[in-house]
Image 1 (tube, rainbow, N blue to C red):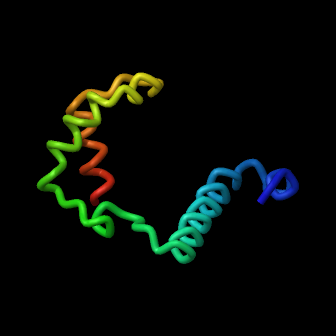
Image 2 (tube, rainbow, N blue to C red; image 1 turned 90 degrees about the horizontal axis):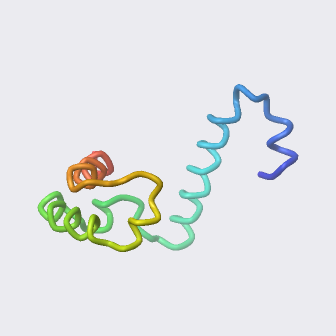
Length: 83
């Protein structure tokens, strides 16, 4: 990866190539560290989503998010990540 590869990739293929590269890096990180890749692998079940969403919307770091995030948004993100 790098500037040379970016320039050599046709503009119409760049989004797909970028995603593929990110997935490969994520897999390489997993293989070298064995860190969980999913909520399920981390031992997180849907039964704690409500608590996580409540804590997430109270987290001061959320103030740096470019868009507001409601409790319902946080739950939707968790549910989509779990699928």
